[in-house]
Amino acid sequence: MDILQFEFMQNALIASLIVSLICGIIGTLIVINRMVFIAGGIAHGSYGGIGLALYFGIAPMLGASLFALFLGLIIATITHKNSTRLDSLIGVLWAFGMALGIIMSDLTPGYNVDLMSYLFGAILSVSHEDMFGMSAVLVLVLLFSVVFYKQLLAMSFDAQFAKLRGVNVTLLYFALVALVALGVVIIIRAVGLILVIALLTIPPYIAEKLTHSMAAMMALASLLSALFCSVGLWISYAFDVSSGASIILVATSTFFIQFCSTKLFK
Amino acid sequence: MKNDLEIKNVSFYYDNTLVLDDISLSYNRFDFLSIIGPNGGGKSTLLKLMIGLLQPTQGSVLLFGDLPLHVSHRIAYVPQDTLANKDFPIKVLDVVLMGRLCKSKAFSTYSQEDKRIARSMLKKVGMEAYEHQKIHTLSGGQRQRVFVARALASEAEILFLDEPTASIDTAGQIEIFKLLKTLNHEVGIVIISHDINVALNYATKVVHVNRTLYFHDVPNHEPMKFFDNTKEHFCPIELISATRCNHIHPKEVL
Image 1 (cartoon, rainbow over the protein chains, first blue to last red):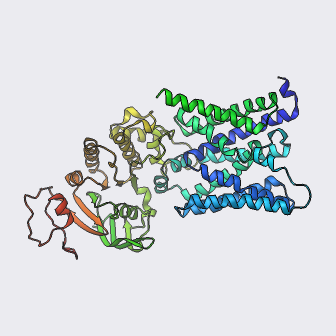
Image 2: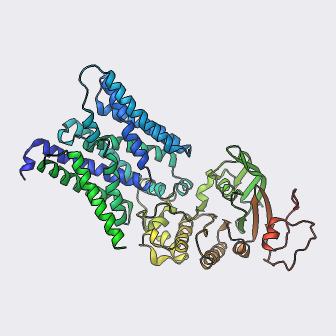
Image 3: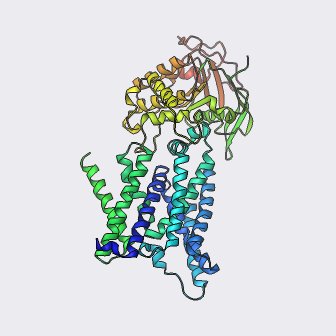
């Protein structure tokens, strides 16, 4: 395995394992709560945070995280008000964030961070600080999903029933959206903004069909995600192609194979 | 005696549309109350007001003499069979365990006691053989039995059911109603039903909701031989079901 002799490869592999665990857990909650579009809106809109961070000279990922949390808060409030126009409003926030990001980085004098690395990810250049941030989010996600497992399961399955059984559904939903926002920003580091939705939805989607509990779905989704990431990284190294796009091609190919085989054998 | 559920002069608006107009109703848990009426007539709204998922625009709803949301641990809700996510990875027993949510400790897994109660409730609805099956592999009728078991697992005093038989064939519906009738010896049953015949066969009280409300006792389900006109009007329940009208004369006369 000469591929592992490079430090950046080791880092990329460790980072992708952390990201996979976050993906498996958060992705499962996103898929069973039908929040894919919300996650997409937050992911794209968070580019506004990058632009603001550049302009005001703070760390881009910190800016993106804060801005993603802000967007998540707005979206959760709209969902809570039970608006039938939620999808349109997310679309507006989606576009607003991206436009704001581009304008702010235009206004920033001097060198601008490579937009491509934000769009398609830069897992081969993750730093130790990045990995520290990823681990922190992972710990948060693990704690949240273990401590509130019962409540999360009940809310995802039947929010009204959960509410009547004394679960604070509103607070739990806000917390979930906040974690989705943080998770999304972290995963952007690995596979980029454009492809984040694929990594958040494909492993849980495959896992959902094969498991009998939410915990098992989270575990299998994490495992699949780790598999996609490592195979993708190897392809990216072996053929000298983009890492983020390789990971997603592995994931989507698996998805198509699984999709076609279940349709064929039905 | 104080009524378990007391609705007084309640009106409810969705946005600016009047859905329920000045309705009053009282209910005790010994009764099997069927709520019938046309689609969009406000049946679900009324049920949601009863359990506190909606708040009345005017008037008051008291459940066990308190605000419904304050006593939600004493009631249980069985929703329509709308399993939006067909592949939701959850086993039958885990669904029933949700009924134990407010009885079990907040930050731990369900106890053996919770599991024992959940299993005994599955047995009560005749679904004990299915506890390890994924919920979506069941038929509509079986799934509703599981939801009833989930409601029972919470040790509720009244069950509120929102068209539990909407997607079930007639034979399956009768099965569910028979089960509920048996359960009515121990818990109150308030049910929305789209099938008026089935509803009237099992209910001891019937309300017809279409913005306004008509209330009926069904003392011995005696079908009417002919429309008698002694009360000088026909109310919707009479016309639909051909049972004798014994409600207090409402403002509107057909």
